[in-house]
Image 1 (cartoon, rainbow over the protein chains, first blue to last red):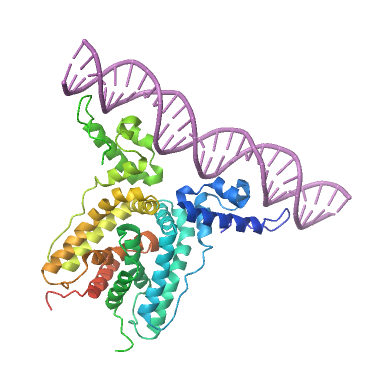
Image 2: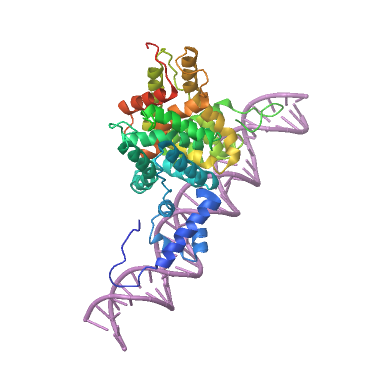
Length: 198
Length: 198
DNA sequence: TAGTTTCAATACGCATCGTATCGAAACTAA
DNA sequence: TTAGTTTCGATACGATGCGTATTGAAACTA
């Protein structure tokens, strides 16, 4: 994610500073959102000069993306119950989204991506990492023959996550508990879920 | 959407200027996106002074929202074929999204909405208007008894639009033609679509 | 005719991004 | 030890863009 490696002669880059910058970025992002975060504030909070930041990331946007990719993966349960596994991971995703402005930031980045194509290069892997747990759960179910063999996995991921994200970002209707389970039941039925018990 | 009515004495507000401002806003939005649009550029393109703009809308954000609500509704066909009607409206939505950065702007606004709650008041009606054609199509199908009587209509709208929007904004995989139809077939199956011919 | 509001033009304050400069610090290589 | 290189913090700076303020003319009401 950095711009240049630090091999050769000269003073080595401070790993400490790098961590402090990314931590400060995440904290300010969580406290004030993307627009409320300023480069100078990050520098002050991380006790670092701006040159140290811009040597690593070419813009505020890149910095934010780098900070995002530091976030831990969502815990992907594998209870063997497809519906329950999906409910779990979606609920934990929505919990994060409701208690931090990360969802809003993600939407902002998506909007920027539509215009700034160079951004996709950095953003797409990050998004794919968020899709991966869902993909894994679906893939496990396929191996248990609970889903059709010819299922388009990427399309299925969109079908599973799309309605919840739609509601979270745009509709802004209640989403915890019942609605999530209901949405997933509908989607799984559409995908041709073959329940293990019949 | 304006801040103050124009009754009473004094020079009346220019309807012409208002239209020119909104048109210029839409054009710049389509050409350069939200960040590429500047208030001064809008003023120049509309041949209007900034005071004329700020007298009507208190910020760039409000102006953009006002311009958005000027956009025409998507044409809601009613052929009697539920799948085809939904394919049509989603395709025309995606056509706009692919040929202009308006979709990206919508994402940007959604991101802002997550932080700026006062914004929801203006944005939600606008989003609801975009959902309405889909809601109408689904409602028509319900009256034809092609969908269950107890269907949660709002949830169904999210299920229909969510996967496509997910793919458009985040996944960024191909979306025209086959995938749209396939996604809708899966969703309708999950919703319990009772085909008219069987 | 007097009072009120909008108009275009323009200047201004202010925040913020990203760049540039500087001398000190930390490292490599000879 | 010494010369060369890169990063460091501190700080200043240019550029951009939002939103406000001022001013005199224009368009309306009473």
